Image 1 (cartoon, one colour):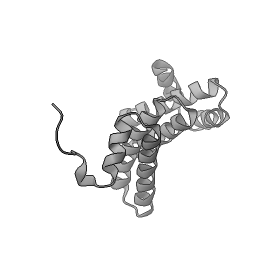
Image 2 (spheres, helix red, strand yellow; image 1 turned 60 degrees about the horizontal axis):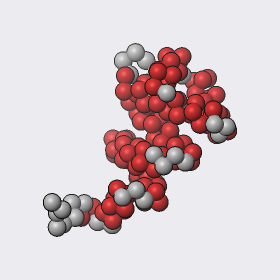
Image 3 (cartoon, helix red, strand yellow; image 1 turned 180 degrees about the horizontal axis):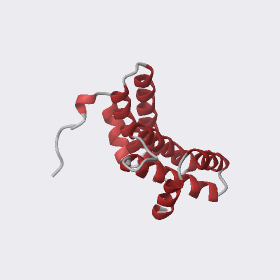
Image 4 (tube, helix red, strand yellow; image 1 turned 120 degrees about the vertical axis):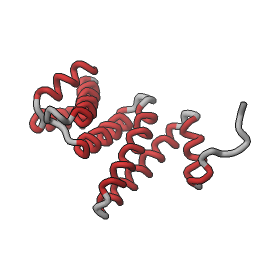
Length: 144
């Protein structure tokens, strides 16, 4: 049974964007991702890191939807969201399970894009190799 009301009406102008994105509209998915990114950026500039984290989670969800279409630029944005969240949760230490998982996923995606000849991803992968422990790369291989 279809409902006769908009369950997202309380959030105003974003409601039609959500509806379009849910129907697979890549432009709407990208727009939602950029709105979340802007919210994250604004929250960080105010020092509101908990709010920034919330926006980063939204960005990751929007980016996952957009990246599912298979375009490199959208996958790179997903990598950025995963990396930000990994930094927020902590990574590269034994107790930072969630952050390590997020960073390993970002690393696996960078590796796949770099293998396809994407220079931005190759540069990112090289930078990652210089800054994180080998266990992140091992975990990335396991999920690739």
